[in-house]
Image (cartoon, rainbow, N blue to C red; front, top):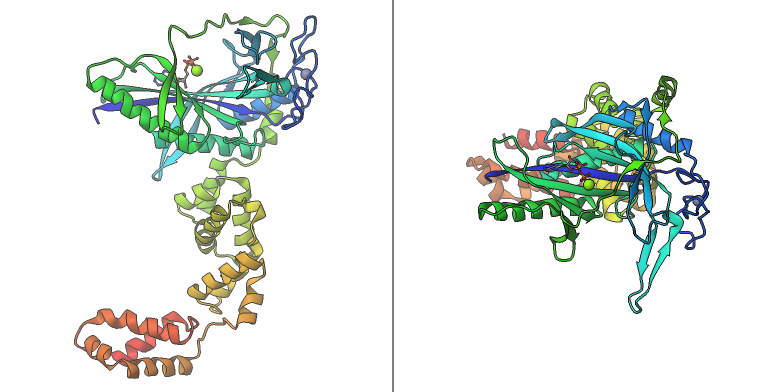
Length: 475
Ligand code: ADP
Ligand code: MG
Ligand code: ZN
């Protein structure tokens, strides 16, 4: 491709505080419409907003986790626009002086770390929710969400591919979950993303004109929409045309982006400092205390996993995507002492199982201790790797411990030389043609013999012994 994509993302994360940003109303989701409202969040005249300290603390957690510089003084501003979901006629946000700037996060792309800059992080309030009646010319508004705290995280235009955008979003979500400030659920809208994208001729510096894509409510849709937009802009430019600066909506049914509003229709928000709120001062003591309260973050955990457990970067990256997954891994290793085995089983069979059933690791039917028990049986040579898979499936279905399953089903590995020799001899005697083939140099039939012996022992023969004895007999 002649052109290089330039992508920057704006993420809105709903903060998990109990109450709203400027009043004491509950942020609980799913309550009957307009039951979590008060004169402040309804924008009645004569009331004053009071900043929720927890909102600042949660935003500071994020700022420090993404290597941002915290501003000792920041300000709230009014963003003015008229819409029925906004009772005050303005949204309280931060504009010129956000609480944090100049951060970054690192993403892992094909074992290579790429740094994506974070321009700014600021706090703002959410708007209400409109529902349009499909049968009557009537719209209804629910103000429960009005004043629910949001944190906006704006990236630098450092992202170059849709896959990098996906990795950036996953990393961001992983961080907000680690530090417990947002539940990170994109489908339910508590973690929302707008994507800005432009193209420029490869090897040139200046950015092209961008489009901003909205209505992206899953990681998959973000990547798909960006792929589509790259194609669309590329066609425009290749035809000698110009990309227009506009807001576009992703249409998931049609698999394309559609123009929503152009630059001419862009709002003039007439931002100005909110006279009802004092500038926010965050001193070094507050920053220090927040820093001390932070858990081990994904990058630090990943580095520790590669060091302490000698894991490949790929494994460490995947196992540290969530705290629960990382904790599960460590509990398993503590009990079985085989980090790479544990990692393989977790990344393969266990995550496969959880994905197929759509469940979280915290609800896994196979506990970390049970998985460790199974790995120990393998390490001790009691069961073969093949039998282990059977044991795993049983654990997944019943939640029982590996030892119990092996005992009950008689799955103990056969390591008795005499027994295996007898089976090997039987197989060789029954397959004279294949033996002749092998002796004539077609050694590929060796696998056939192994398979026959394993079948005869119902997978229980120690595979290494089978191999050795077969070689000795045929050699
Ligand atoms: P706005 O306030 O209009 O949304 P910003 O300047 O805050 O504009 O930029 C929003 C996002 O767009 C940021 O993530 C930024 O990195 C990205 N961005 C800015 N210019 C471009 C461009 N030419 N191409 C792609 N992304 C861009
Ligand atoms: Mg924008
Ligand atoms: Zn309220």
